[in-house]
Image 1 (cartoon, rainbow, N blue to C red):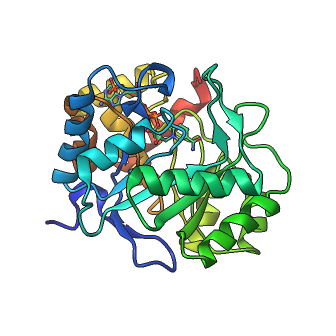
Image 2 (tube, rainbow, N blue to C red):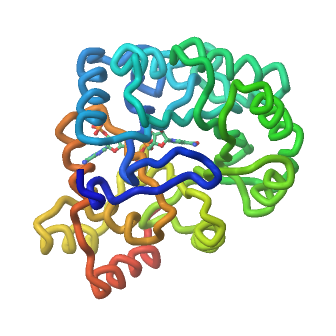
Image 3 (cartoon, helix red, strand yellow):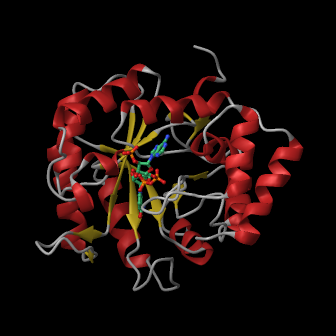
Length: 294
Ligand SMILES: NC(=O)c1ccc[n+]([C@@H]2O[C@H](COP(=O)([O-])OP(=O)(O)OC[C@H]3O[C@@H](n4cnc5c(N)ncnc54)[C@H](OP(=O)(O)O)[C@@H]3O)[C@@H](O)[C@H]2O)c1
């Protein structure tokens, strides 16, 4: 397979995990509101198998998607897992019956979360586990995460976790965590129209740490911009493909995990790796943030 396939490759620092930069985020495979089974369970299995058949070897998930449902679908679709597949999961939340997202951050919660992931994915050890910080609002909030990262580092020493990442964090929290254990990736909200992490991305790039934007297509509020549409029309691409290609061009440490429950959208998203954006087009797209609706 060509090196350029799916955006080229990236190796998580200090690991033997090399992935294609275009991966897949599994959150859309659960039912509405990321709760319960999907409306089309066979379709969900097909999307995962098509992704892996196309060369995807980086899948993002969590046992609190569903809850449990997404991991169970991944296992059903892909177990025994192909060599080289890296499954990244996250801890830090739980879903009570009212479908809300609540913090689950005690040592007992985090340890139970690791065992839930192991059981539902059918694994003896988790490749990468992100500690997802649950703040009171939408974005990251300052505050020590040392206690939770120490628990993950202990689980790593016990062999249940291979590598540790972080999600929804500030630069100070990344620095704090790195004093406790190696951090291989950071997963925060970032896309063409939501660029609070520009400085963090560049800092992590210098350290060789992966930056994995969640909501790369805008998440629950799909990206919409007349500039994006006009660039896409000019390139005979879709706006979503241009949004993904822009992220691939933004920094070599950016890995993509767009989520979809549709085989057609999956194919479109993976084809974004073939799109080359000129410096002029990149400058035009950079201008979107000034008029962002997000
Ligand atoms: N760490 C965190 O806190 C956090 C938070 C959110 C998400 N995540 C992770 O990040 C991944 C990506 O985020 P996300 O799935 O929420 O948002 P996203 O990738 O930005 O967008 C997904 C939405 O876009 C649609 N879509 C996908 N491809 C499309 C295309 N080619 N054309 C038109 N629409 C398209 C999907 O609908 P269809 O199903 O109809 O394609 C879905 O509604 C998740 O799957 C999850 O693994 C992490």
